[in-house]
Length: 138
Image 1 (cartoon, helix red, strand yellow):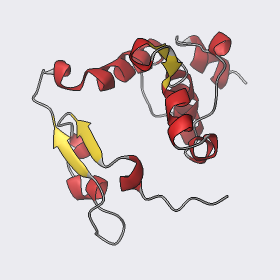
Image 2: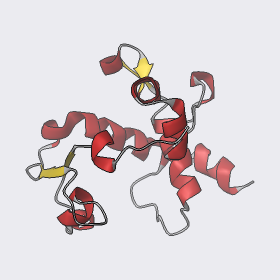
Image 3: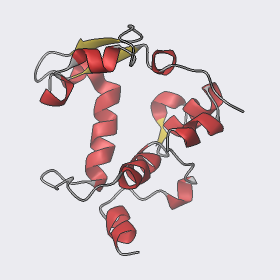
Image 4: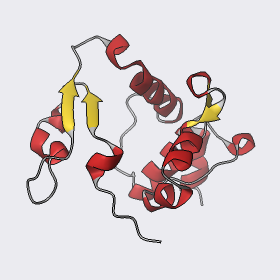
């Protein structure tokens, strides 16, 4: 089965901070032909309450990748592994479901897989730097 979804179909709205990595807004809002498909909005500095759900992902990410850790050795597979585990954490806001459960229900497991996110059983989730030490030692 092939998907004909555009980025804007999955993420019509982007909410972020004003970090330098987001300085080329058109790269996020427009497709490769320059057509608008998403809208980017920036939170006020030092206002994590404006994006509480994003901050939860940041906290879960930092459980695995401590502040100050270099990303130089990260590959796309490393990032996919980290966010597969982050997205496998069951959350109160989803009534005990994970972000992966919600995404795969709404879009499909096939699309999650195409985006590089894998299903991780809850009893196999690793939310510590051990995840990367296990990954890099293989």
